[in-house]
Image (cartoon, rainbow, N blue to C red; front, side, top):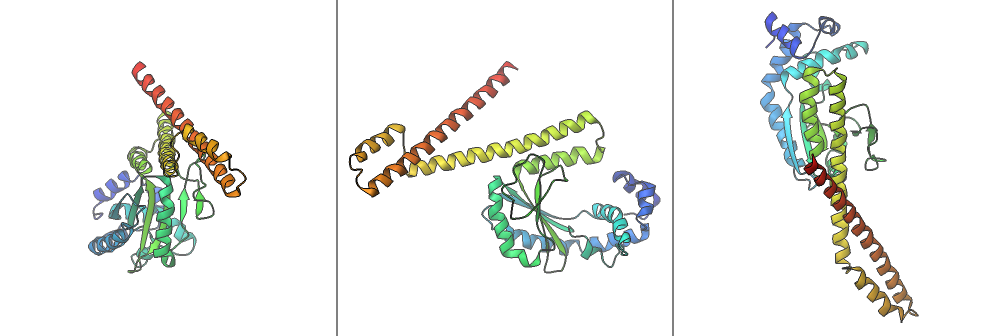
Length: 304
């Protein structure tokens, strides 16, 4: 894989590794080749391990779909080159003997959700099954301006990345790290596009970078709209089950019952019904607002 000078040069070009960066790693091509051969030899074993964990996570009702993988060997070597200076500063170094214990994303599982709020069910499921083997506290990458209420008091919130994702790292029964990422379908779609565009071309063009960031914000808006509609439908169904059909039905109930308002239980029933009416009108107003927005966008598309 890296046995010739041509292969080494192609590798450095592919991963944007300068001569200085490689020298700073204090690694030799021979050491990297040994790690690559060892990892490739164990690939099938790792594949079987991560599949078993994915099958357990698939049983969580909050999970819409998932994927899993064993880390690409070239990406592993690039990470070792990039990270080794940090290990050298602490008096250690990545090597054939310790890379499996130190690199915690040799295997990965990605859980995809339909709605943001599905995360809480997934989080509880992961903590119930794997809390004792967490290698670090879970955390969420968010962007400035995102609503973080879902995560507060539950996991750490970090804002240093441009993408959105919740991360867990667990130790498998084989002693190796498995990284679990949780995202919505919107976040996953954007992450794939961003990775395809940003990293190979190292976007330094300001205009292109602004377009990329704009699309990222639109991804967040898509998730928010999905959550809004999901919440609206849920609340509307709950109101129907409670017996609220329209304003006239509510007011007729009040008129009939108010005659017996000496009864404390009746008074409470009236109060409860009024509250239901307020909720119904609020949802109806939201529905009309949403319809107006969609109609305006359709007219704009036609005019364009």
